[in-house]
Image 1 (cartoon, rainbow, N blue to C red):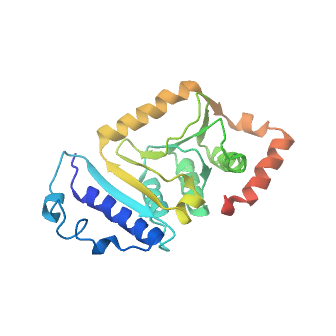
Image 2 (image 1 turned 90 degrees about the vertical axis):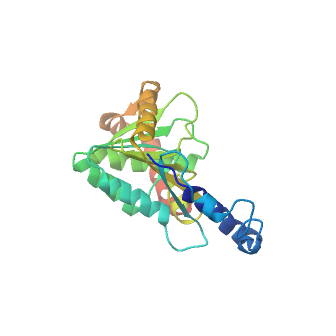
Image 3 (image 1 turned 135 degrees about the horizontal axis):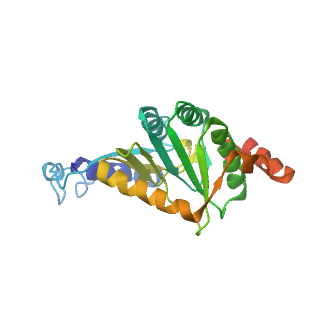
Length: 231
């Protein structure tokens, strides 16, 4: 496992880019932050520890959907299992298709969402997309021990992605977000164990349970799903 100073530098650069966009002040021209600051750049590149981390960010200041694309890359590489915890699950077509293909290919895809919505429209849209995963063979859970605000995806016990981004279109395209991709079996294993520990305090939504939902719930789901690009 290896952590390098480049991860810290990447976070500093992301902060400066966000500041420049919001405040109109170019921090890259400030010598106390870049090019001769308190910590020389050569020192920032030194290795501390041994966990490999990649910083991935996106926002309205770029047309690239790097966090979405990173999720896709991780999903595509999965051979055994994918665990996802997210408050909101409103994926675009590419991410939804990738997860459905993985589930239909025999990958153990599991999604966990909260039972207490803080945004009702997002919650019911999430239920709608969860139905698509169930049809593909994924397992879905509703966490019932409070509000679930974890935001991470793990793949095969080898790599994990966690950070500020929800698994939704707004995080992919509109919000300033930053995630850390951790290439380490020990750290990923701890996150996956946390997911498994949360299953006993969650309610599994089976295909049978999902099909038995009321007409009113179906109406709320479909109405909210129509608003998905705006949520």
